Image (cartoon, rainbow, N blue to C red; front, side, top):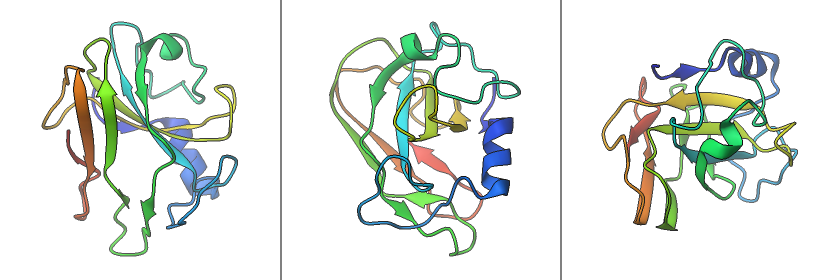
Length: 146
């Protein structure tokens, strides 16, 4: 697999269902409430063409770590989808080959999948201890490294 937008995720950005804007206190069911997930691809087979929600086949078993709601940086600056770095504290579980970004709507059946990464510095990541996902803040870079 390769990094990319889930096709339905791109549709949700285009329709305005996803809003990449700073909010000091995002809440579930807001267009700008996103979480980061560390995913084991031995349990989840990515399908960027058809998967739309976090209840996609195998994804629940593949998610090893889930972040809190992310603090986004306004995308109006050079079109960069930037966010505050996400720190997973005291991780444990299987090795994770992918990082998933999904909008939090409050349930797996409603949480929309946005973007998938399985290449880049730090992947795969062996869990055990703290893991930081650093979001890129340069045009053309979404995920900087783990």
